[in-house]
Amino acid sequence: MNKFTQRFAAVLATGALVAAGLALTATAANADQATGNIKLYAAGSAGATSAASVLAGGSSTANPMYWGISIDQICPTGFRQAESIQIAQLGNPAAGVNGRLGGIGSFQDPSTDGVYGVNGLKPSDASIAMDETATAPAQNPYVDNNRSLETAAPALTTGTFELRYYCYADASQPDFANDKYFSITLNFDKTAHTWAVPVAKIATTTAITASADQTAKTATIATTVKKASDGTTSTTATGSATVNQTAPTAATLGTVTIVNGLATFTTAALTPGTVYSFTVTYAGDAAFNGSTSSTATVSINGSLTGATNITFDVLAGANPGGLVLSNVPTSVDLGAATYNAGLLTASNLTGFSGITVTDNRSLDAASWALTGSVSDFTSGTKTLSGKYLGWTPSLTSGPAGALAGSTVLPAAESAATGGLKVVSTLATAPIVNGSPVTVVKAGLNVAIPANSATGHYSALLTLTLG
Image (cartoon, rainbow, N blue to C red; front, side, top):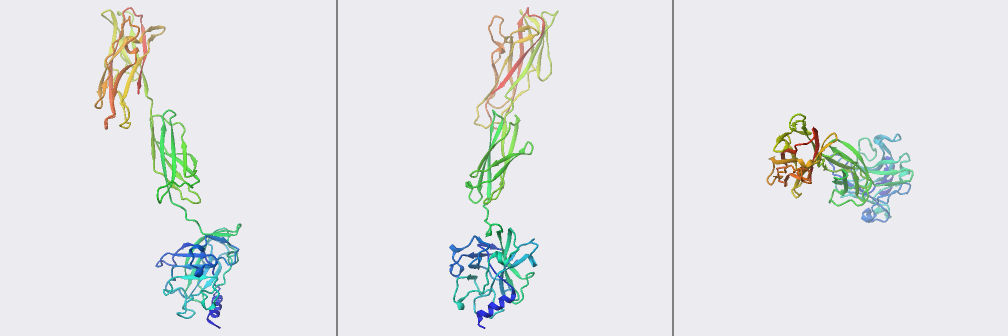
C-alpha cells in the first residue's frame, strides 16, 4: 500500500470526517494558543489561498461543502497526530460528546518530514492549505472524504452551530471530550438549505439634540446613529430607537423609526418652569449594534406675567375714609383713605416688595423690562379710575446696570388718563454673568377726589416681564 493509500485507510479508521467553515476568526484550542483564522474557499483556488475565492456561505446540500480550507495556526503540543473537522451544536438532543453531530472531512499533514502517526499540524508547518482541485496523488495536500453539511450532520437544526477543527493526541483514537480544537460559529437555515458566516455588526454611537418650543411647551429630540469608528452618520442604519425622559422624572416617552440613520420625536406639552432631560436608546439592526446617547436638556419657561390685587377702603364717617393694609401675598392693602389738601389719599410704602426677577438666559440675550398697569377700582357698582394709583419704584438688589423705573404720580381728576392706568416700568436689567437675581419694590399711593363714594375698592395691578 503506498503512502497515500495508507493515510486514507488510517483516517477512515478514526471515523473522523471533515468539512470546513468560512472566513472567520477561530477560538484558540487552549489558552496558550493565539487566535487564528479559518477560511473556506470556492473551487479553483490554487492551494486554497486565493482571497477572491473566500466563501461567506453556501448551500448546505452542495457536495462538497467547500473546495479548500486554510488555518493560520498550528495544533497545540501533544495534539499533532491528526486532524479532522467536526460539526457540533450544543443543546441539540441528537448531539454526542461535547455537542458533536458528525464529521465532514479528514486531514493529514502533506509534508514528508515524518511518518504517519506523528504528522498533524506542527511547528514545521506555517499553516495548512487544502485544495479539492489537486489531482496529482504525489502532491495531494490532504486526504479528504468531504461531503455536504446536511449529509454530514442530518440532525442539525436551524440556528447557530460550530465547525470545529480538532487536533488529535492519538491518530487512531479521537477523544472528542479532551482533544483540542479551534472553533468558528456559523449560521444554518434548514428550510432554505443554506449556511453562512455571521456578519460582524458595526459598532455605533447615538447622538441627540433637544430643542424647546416655548409657545407649544414641547421638546423635539433629534436622533442620529453614527459609526463608532469614525463618527460619520450611519446612513444605512434602520430599526427603532426608544426615547426616554430622565428628569424631572424617569419615563419612556415613545419609539421612533430610524430612517437613513435619523429620526425625530416631539413630546407632548411639558410643564412650564421645568428643566427636562432626555436620552435615546438605539436598538440596532442586522448590520449595526445598538447604543445609548448621552443626555440632552431643555428648559420650558414659566409664566412671564403676574397680577397683584390692590385694595383700599373709603370708610363712612371719616372724611372721607381710610385704607387697610393686608399682608396676604397676592394683595396689598393701602388702608383707609384720609382727607389731604382737597383729596382723599392712602398709601403703602412697604407692602409691594420682594418682587424678584431671576434671569438665567445666555449672555447674548436682550435686557428685560418689568412693567405694570392697573385696572379701574371698583366697589360693587361704584368705580374709580385706575389713573388715581401711582408708585415709587426702587431696587432692593440687582446686577450692575439694573435700574428702577421712574416715579408715577396719581393723575388729576381732570386728566383723561395717567397714573398706573398707563403701562409703566417698574425695573429693567441687563444679563450679567453670575448675577441673575434682581429684587424690586415700590411704594404705592392713591389720591382720589374728596367726594368719592364710600366703599371697599379693589383693582388688579398686572406685571409683565419681557
